[in-house]
Amino acid sequence: MPLLEVEDLTVRYDKAVILNGVSLQVGEGELVGIVGPNGAGKSTLLRAISGLVRFEERTKRGVGGEIVLEGQVRFGGERIDGLAAHEIRRLGLVHCPERRRPFREMSVEENLLAGAYLSRSSQEKRRSLERCYALFPRLAERKSQLAGKLSGGEQQMLATARALMYEAKLLAIDEPSLGLAPRVREELFAAIGTIHAQGTPVLLVEQEVAQVFRMAKRNYLLSQGRIIAEGTAAQITADETLRAGYLGL
Image (cartoon, rainbow, N blue to C red; front, top):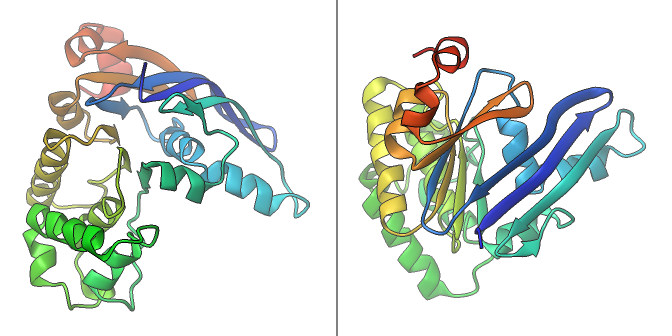
């Protein structure tokens, strides 16, 4: 049984169809990549899986505009597409969104502890802090610094670490390398590889196609809201039309 199973997921904003019948799976222990051009619907897909699209639907109801979400999402065999985002988070499906968004006036360590707000155990929080500092030594060096003073790369490290602070059974991470220098990207991807190697399944949305293909066991290619290909890197890149038209390889 897959850890995460998405079936015929459709998202419409007013009359615009952002996702159209998307289906995918992530198994226990897998690192699965989602690639595709800008505007393909990759970020909306993660937001729908993690409950944020449903949150938008509820908060904007009656305010103008319409958000419709259809299809099914199962996590650990249970339907979660009707749950609130914090309920999905409590189950262990952790979404690390793009553009980082730290609490700028809080310290690095305070930001990390905010990620463990659902945990009742101080021992669990301390173990999670130790793990995050081991993964990202730079954060340990800056644990008392205000998050708003960090570089872009350090803020992304903080966002990733904060997502891991509460029992992540699956880490869904959106465009972690966006706007980062090459050396910082390498450091970040190495940490994501370590997170996976330590036993946390990962669903990785990323523009750096070659990097994703080096890391992921399986991949999905998303374009105009539809899955147009899936398989290993070798299987997808064997199609010259996909290579030239969608992957830029």
